[in-house]
Length: 146
Image (cartoon, rainbow, N blue to C red; front, top):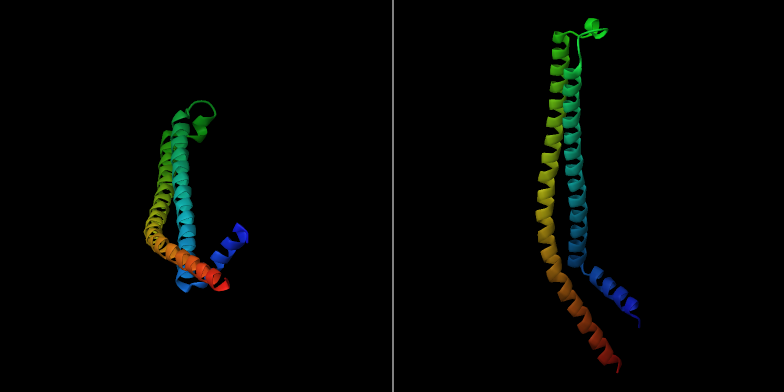
């Protein structure tokens, strides 16, 4: 019997145990949830920085405008101040929304990570016991065959 065959039989034996199957499924589910929420936090943080850059670029652009030449009829200091104020408010809302998203995703990640640690502890207790039971069964079967 090859190592691969023995390993496949061991995996079948382990998956036949309902506790092991439940714990393994829970570890897999929580790992996926941790990965997804971690990615959501990264995305929200990236978007927050994007809106910060946009806000900064708006301020730089507005302050760089002069009111001479053709722009004298288009932009007045009052209009520029209004645009800047509107832009700042919009970017503040966008940044705030991303911070809320990041906070919620972080909260979910933290809960999932704590649950994952508990599930991994259970997994680390159940698997070795089942592997030992499998080895004992194999040894008993080998003795019975002789």
